[in-house]
Image (cartoon, rainbow, N blue to C red; front, side, top):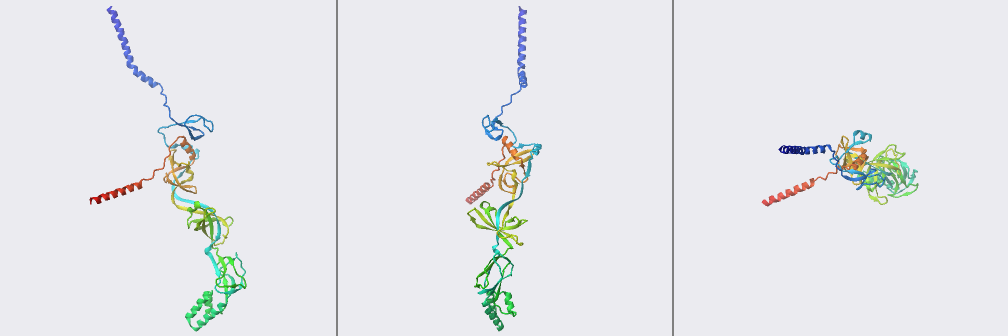
Length: 429
């Protein structure tokens, strides 16, 4: 009986020992199973669904695109991603992407307007009779003829000349120099030239015929000269306008008139008359605005020594405007979405960062950058639309414009603190 009891107890002890050993090794076994079992990937958060044909169109639920009836694709949230678009160098070369450099330079703007050639009124000479008389001889001329300076136009017979010359000669022979000088001044007032008076003093005969000559070379605008016509003192006989320089009358739209400055350089092209552009300058900006076409009349002056320009001609004027140095970038690099204006800044190693910029004036394929870039930056000028699509698809953030500097508030605060300290010092006194 005792032997049987002892055997039972030994069996129970062995069973308990085996159970204890299994209990001790159970956590290790669980860990081994956990390591051998593959973990399920965590569910990614969907930001929105988009049309694959129009990535900029977003939806808040899956389904079919309304345009092409294609399945909408999910856009997942990314964590720790870069804000730049990554394009390998080989791929960028295959796509024909080109870079441009931001630099400082002159922004040359060209304004092309039509103009008409007109007479230079500052070269207008008016020929008037200095005394009463009648025209004894007239050289046949009519309005529009070209005349040379000093060319004879007519001969005026003036009876008053005879008595004035006889008086001057008598006073001069009498030895009264003061009265003789007064008589000479009367002769000049009657239209006698200094050379004619000197000839009279040297013994030239008294004459009452006055030659009427062209005062300058140019176009005879008017010639009221007829044989036998009675002429009174102060009557206009002829008008001559020079052609050594001409005016250009151009109408500049009101919106572009701010680009015009007096003295500004200009070039003129007239088809068939000027094989090479002629250079001139802006002479004046007339103050009155043309109410019919909302334009300002700009007057330009052009040299015309060879008389190739004739009043009435039409031509094209190129007005060149420069306004100091600016930070410039090729205009092709700028993308305007309507809400933002941005460029893609090359950062090397095939990385391109979308950057918001503020653009000023634009001319000759260059744009002025007011904020957002620095001289020496490299920007994409060809292929940036692909980068923009990739940035929109990946929802990359755009580097915003820097806030305005707080230098002015700082100065105001320092001035206020200085004023308060001064008041405190005065109070201590």
